Image (cartoon, rainbow, N blue to C red; front, side):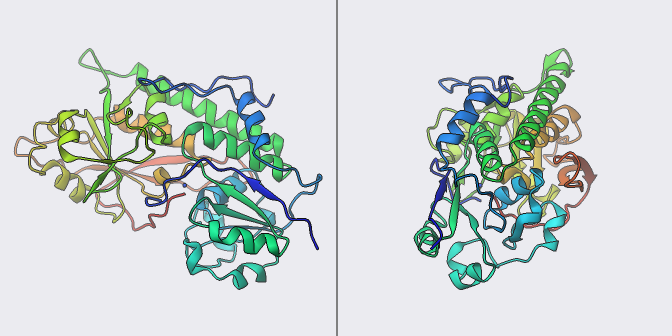
Length: 366
């Protein structure tokens, strides 16, 4: 029987809302007690300690149940080994050429269907897919557990998966690309001033309502904002995605509001936020700085991290959304949508799409 090996990469993920290689320092500004991540070389060392090496054997048949991990596989140019994915593994566009085993939740996917693809490595999401670990290992199928929360976790997973797939050079190139994009985004925000004042500094990122949830200290979104010189208003809360109160949001007076456009409502959803009782005096509402963002992209801690920063930077300096005196937004809206990229070229190319209505899209994270 094939030797059972579990590649572990696990740091406790928030499931309900959808998750020597480089000497450059990851450019993340520290917020409060939040520490800056270490160098990417240190991250590589940590990622290697999280994986058991399979005696030099590179998996030839990979099945991924994690959208962000699927994106990493493509970004590492290892997609020829990908034999199956989930319905929610929808980026890059080339994923449509790979068979799907069904939905995202492991409980809706039968073990028999997974085994039918004869994988020698299955990529799972920690917690959500834990029930599949033992049955797969009993069959001699190796498992890679994904659980990226912070920006450093993303680097670690890229390096760990690159090591497992024999794509160390590609992992280095990908992380270097992300690094360059983060630096470009940071410089774009830093260079933009409005009326002699710096760009708004405090951000409320809405993950969900009824009840409200927002990124906390241990979320890659908090790290991403920090790279841009911005402060998540809930950076001090210890969880990755803590439940917050409406009173707390109002009291912290955000200058910008970002929210995932799960239902492609765009301007309508932004107007609804502006009309919430008690929100009219928030700086973000007064100034019309309320932005819908693509719910897939910004819920996935994966290889498009650098382009997320670039897209946010363009939004922050755009001044495209304005709030009229009567409390309504203009007829323009900015919705971030993906631009196609070739898996054989740079893996993270995006564009800002100006429209009045976002196109329908899935809202699956991870």
